[in-house]
Amino acid sequence: MGNTALITGASSGIGTELARYHASKGGDVVLVARRENKLNDLKAELERTCGITATVIAADLAESDAAENWIIPFLPRKLVLKISRKAMEKK
Ligand SMILES: NC(=O)c1ccc[n+]([C@@H]2O[C@H](COP(=O)([O-])OP(=O)(O)OC[C@H]3O[C@@H](n4cnc5c(N)ncnc54)[C@H](OP(=O)(O)O)[C@@H]3O)[C@@H](O)[C@H]2O)c1
Image (cartoon, rainbow, N blue to C red; front, side, top):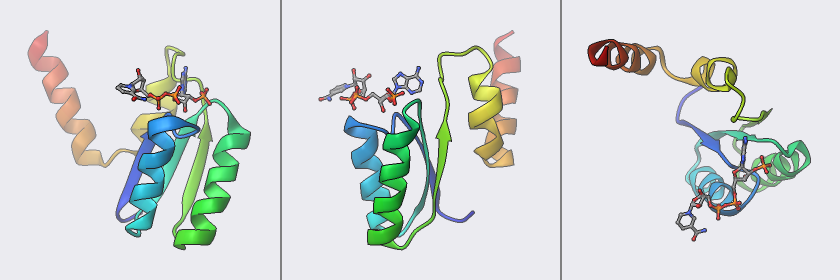
């Protein structure tokens, strides 16, 4: 993936508008929220109107293992390492 934005809360409000903005600039998007039907509607809209690739992840981010399962796999490796080092410094 190149210029890809992972957007949580993409099924409504600010998240939907951020996804539209990023896609309008030609960036791919990973759309995360619980309401899969809303995310699929947005995916179809953005792929049709902007010619980008949208990936849908229907997930409840309030679950304790949500970041590990749904967010971290999409982050660039360098960023994950940075987060890990910061976390260790605080201990
Ligand atoms: N609107 C404003 O003017 C404004 C101003 C300042 C700050 N804020 C803050 O910005 C945030 C977003 O505002 P908004 O107006 O865009 O709200 P919104 O329309 O209610 O959107 C919230 C988004 O978060 C998702 N979400 C909620 N709980 C989730 C969970 N457990 N797991 C995964 N996704 C979850 C919802 O999707 P699903 O229900 O599909 O999961 C939805 O896409 C809020 O924290 C709000 O307080 C908003």
